[in-house]
Length: 337
View (cartoon, rainbow, N blue to C red):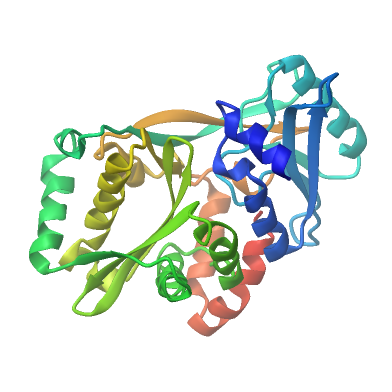
């Protein structure tokens, strides 16, 4: 996969989700079948890639997704004609064998796929001088909460170890329960540690209060951007010590000092007005994140959070006892890919 990764590293629209290490994480965690398309020019060099997975599920049906459990990932090509050719090949080969094809990125307009322009992702421009970034943060909420966390004695530590993964996952289960959604399996984060944390492509920050980890976040590094991929916290300490604000600022400040130019706050549903507002208080700017489908818009990622189905599903999940949630959550989560 060396040639694949070299092409990804050089492509201006690539993300960490295009890297082979992320494919390995998904495959080893969920046993989905990878479909890795590479287009080569006349000299035998890669001029385009399209990573996707074939997902077979008795619950949610078979489909092809580029890429499951990824905010944005899709075809990377130097030539849009080549991209269209590869997408046509995928549709021709698999279109009748699956319920739908989902691509989580822009594609060529004449590709024959249907656009669902629903999600946003927020990007913060960084500066080598972190104080310049700090000045633009919302004063009443963000700057105040950072100071509050410091006054409370919250300490941020980088913990790129299996212990750090364990602390993160303990809090992640609490966070997913709070939001009434299933939790991924712990194996996912162990594989992230194996393939990305160990190689420096990802790092873990813990927020410590009174000798206890009360918040944790997992970040990816790729090219000029730090990606805020996962956050978790203990609801009991959120208002008292506001640890997430200080933790996020520590990651941003560190990214500035290390020479990164952008901080990606990840995907957001526009129906989640509170989260949209929160990210914008960090001076992060919303960018359209269109997904494309064939032959129709379908699947978990197409369900809008304001819709009745989403409210029913989260309501059912919220009513389940904790032991059942913890046991079946990872199994259900697999089917939401």
